Length: 456
Ligand SMILES: [Zn+2]
Image (cartoon, rainbow, N blue to C red; front, top):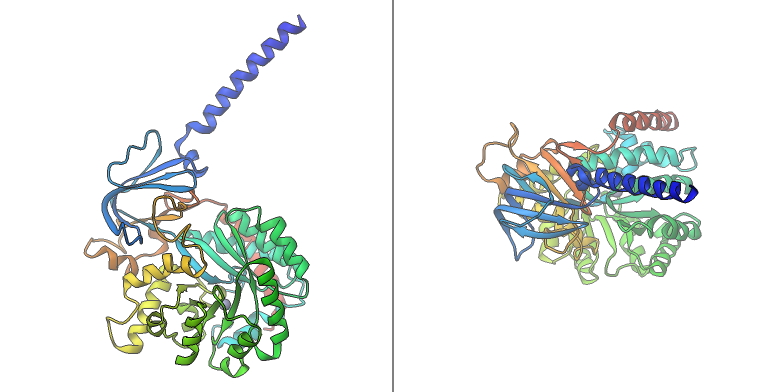
């Protein structure tokens, strides 16, 4: 009798496993979320950013697992989940090469201040304050959902890492976001903590990368030497702010980078606005990368980076949202600002970057800045499936005249219908995947706490 009951139990268990497996794999939307096979069918335009493929009309994009499997017309996709691409533009996800995600908690702070006034009023008082990992998590959670909504698939998050708990909450929110990320950890007194966070929180996530955040200034050159030493030890890039405000060059930022031996391939320099020709030559000679943050530069009255001069020197440049200093994660706004600033400065409508150049800066250009261009930045079969689907059939975008230009001049985050990172849909049918009300409520709690710490 015992044996017969056991056979019956095995039978029931087998049926349950079959039914359960069917339920898990049977619904199309679930397979899109878990990174199965998805085909974007009959996309009206596919902007691949791959020079060999160019821009295609009426084509399919097949995603298999975490990769782009094919980009062409009439793909045989079997039982893949189908996203209707008619009236849609498919393009790579944006690569944000410089931001501070926690700073959604200080949106609207110090809007009448330049860089140093803003830092003094909105950021520096938080060092040594009770700001903690829960606060970091709340701000970064909100920022990542907002960035995904705007078509951003990779973020480079320069974290002030006010204390170790803050940094860990920051990284946890990045891991939970399911975005691709580079975490630039501002180096405090404890290198072992950074090594531990890398080993236990970042390395286990295939989407996670580390950089060392440093401070370039002659008064802090020993600290910069330490950051450079740690970045070499860990085999990651150093990430610094450079000549952002008019007052920065006099602090010896370039000299400190020379003295610390930090001018070398992969160094990421944020802003690089107030640069002489000789200094730009020096960046180019050492293959230093630049993050251009036009919205932030406008907000803080910082100045206008010399993008055409950087282009002439083939310096690798990408676009950054720069956290609290532009108050938004709207990357399309950043594209317009990148184009518009150079035109307004030069009174030349053909000035670099053109709208097409700006799209490249925000995608493949950003991937090159981060050294990730073999994996992301273009819709090249074999690369990771980080992409966005844009709906043109809306009042702010239609009618069709010149979509390549309209992409830059008309798109808003509300046009972004689908966002895939590593083959996983993080925005579906116009809705970001996540609990938005709860995220906003928790960010408000953290923002209120910070308001109580900052000088009024
Ligand atoms: Zn910054």
